[in-house]
Length: 145
Image (cartoon, rainbow, N blue to C red):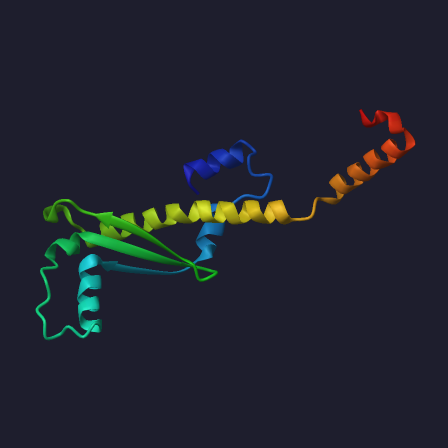
């Protein structure tokens, strides 16, 4: 559990519906990693350009992509780029790219939750309060102002 999640729970800020780290994790059903060099090479082959020399892809080896597939089929990407080839580490690049992709999922899930809450029928207590207010207005019409 992250420090932020602990703080949220300790503050009691987890009483209403919200997106949790577990929700986010459950929403990710697939992930794929590749470098820009991988993509350029594959595109070269898939486009049938085998008889044309492949342009220099060495600089593209420093750019790593992560594609997350969400439960509903939507995809989100994250990237990481290394400035110095001497510092490049594929595993670290994948971790950074994934974290950048995950950061894009939070607002999407937050929006989806807000839309669900917005379109949901009001709770029974709200309906009961409204019914009582309407009954009072009918009984005491001068209360309108």
